[in-house]
Each structure stands twice: as structure tokens, then as C-alpha cells.
Length: 328
Image 1 (tube, rainbow, N blue to C red):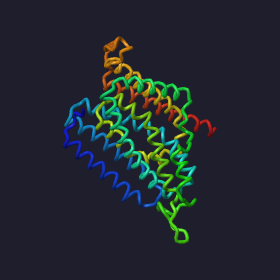
Image 2: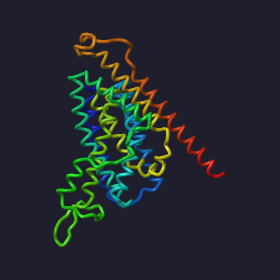
Image 3: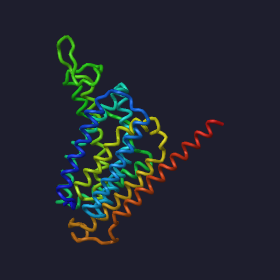
Image 4: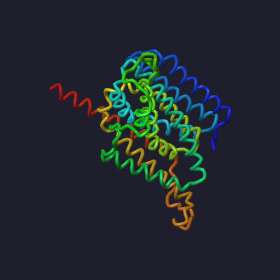
């Protein structure tokens, strides 16, 4: 159950919807390659917007929901940066012209947001009724953290999912782009352009990433409104990060390790919360297990900031060191 007033949630959803419409219809429809200055301005705007939004939550709902939002937003944003590897590969595989990549990302991310919203509502309903699911989420995040730490994560490999493969077989489609058009005409016959498959690829791929990020944020907050808005603010800045960091992603060498620490910590936190609310009859006779005290949300925020900050700083240090050695 959300601690945030209904009127505040309603206003927030309207404002966020306006953000997406403006970004998609007014900005995204203008084919161009965003400059570094434009990307930095957009990212700074959305980061400031997230910080202001957290302050507003603090004012209307108190400190705990605000800290939960900041923790969730930082986690989702960081996981989204890692996911940009796959977006780069998708664009390359589909040979997307650079002038329309921003529009493609806008539509794909909007689709992903809708699908994530459904996922979040379903997850909230399940967790409210079946607290033992926290065990599954926690173990899954710990497993994902170990894979990241060992370098076994396959996010840098894109594989078409079954839905896209099926679409290629049953949909009449040309093999070239016609600007931003979803359909084009050939000798009076209408065909879909590769845009259709591209939108589905980005949207569904992002949802597959949600199997990591949604359990992670549910480990930080049980409030569906906080979960959803954290995802929205992370996605809002994602397309500008794509253009700004696209050439630098392979140089953020320690980011996976930072994310590994964050996911591992949240996974342990989820398992402990499952133990505190244990209802499984074969574990401690169905009774609560209070082995250690609950981990406070502020500590989660500290761990997230320190882990990601250290990983980023270490990556920048190594990048500069390699640049200096290459000039010698």
C-alpha cells in the first residue's frame, strides 16, 4: 500500500505522461543526431527532475518513501546504463540510420514502460499475497550478481526472441527503412518496414532486463508507485545516455562489478526480509526467523552510491591510465 496521497500520484502520472509525449512527438519526431551538448542538457534536466521529485515525495509522504525512491532510481538507472550495451548491438544488427535512432529509442522505451507497468502491477499483487516469493527474488539476484562478478553475464550478446522470429515469418515486410514510417507502399501494396520489428526488439528486450531490475527495486520498496516512478525516471534519461555514452560503454570496465555488489546486497536483503516474514511450513515451522535486524533503506542507498561511485571512478581512472600509456 502506497503512503503517497492519491492526488500527488495522479498529478505525477499526468506530468510524466506529458514528458513522454513531448519527448516522443515534439523532439523524437525531428530526425537528427543529438549533439553532446544536447545530450548533456537532457540528462541534466531529467536528473534534476528526479532529485526534485524525490524532494516532493519527502514533503508529502515523509523521508522513508523519498529515500526508497532515490535508492530505486539510482539502481534502475545504473542497470539501464549496463543495458545500453544491448541497445547499441540491436541498432547495429538492424542497420538503423543514426538520424532516426533517437525516435526509435523513444518509441521502444515507451513500449517498454507500458510492459514494465504491467509487470510491476503483477509483481506487487503477487508479493502482497505470497511473501515467500522474496526468497526466489533474492536467490535470483544473488545468482545474477555472481554471474556479473565472474564476467559470465551475456548482456553484450543480442539474440532475437521467439516473438520477433515469428513476426519475420508472418508479416509482409520490406528490408529497407522509409524514414520513420512504420509502413511503406511498393507498387500500390502496403508493407511494413523494419521499424516494426525494431520497436518490438527494443521493447521486449528491455522487459527481459526487467527480470533483473524489477526484483531489485522490490527489494528496496514495496510501494508500486515508487517502483513505477523509479523506472520511469530511469527510462526518461536512457536515450540521451545512449548517444552520450555509446562510444564509451566498453570502457566502463568496472561497472559490472559495481552492479554485482548492488544486486548481491539487495538479494541478501530480500532473503532476510523473506525470513522475517516467513510463512513456509518447512522453514522454521512456518514461523518468522529474526536472525539479524532488518536492513534500513538508508543503508541500501549508501551501499548503492558507494558501490556505483567507486566502480565509475575506478573505470575512469583506468581509462585515463590507458590513454596516457598509449600516448607514450
